[in-house]
Image (cartoon, rainbow, N blue to C red; front, top):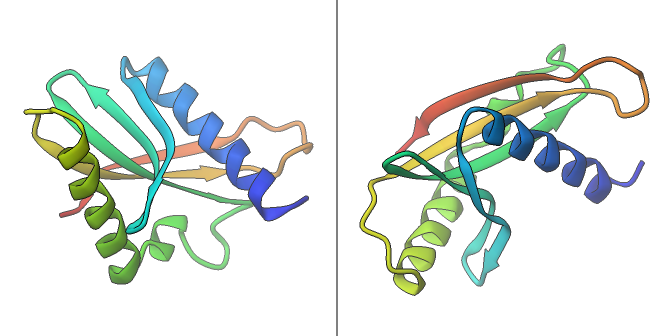
Amino acid sequence: MEKRKIGAIGENLAAEYLRGKGYRILEKNFSCRYGEADLIAQDADCLVFAEVKMRKNASFAEAREFVDRRKQARIISTAKYYLLKHDCDLPVRFDVIEVYSSPGDGKSPRIEHIENAFE
């Protein structure tokens, strides 16, 4: 399956997971010249920029390990740009959502949500 389609599946699963926890999804795949935010959501009194990583399993490495310092810097720059363009007084949080699943295998995905994954 194409990498982009797999990513979209992971992002949709993560968005549904967050909705189930009471989050309101504001944006999916927000992009600007600085980078991209997979999901932007509101969690009660907090604006959340969530990076979604989908993998078949964690045998090689946990998905969160692929959100390195460079990736974090791009997400933070994207968040700053978003905040310049949108009037929002909420505190900001950066989360990572790991989705472990093989599309088409019939198993339920395992989702790990790491709040405040980086600053």
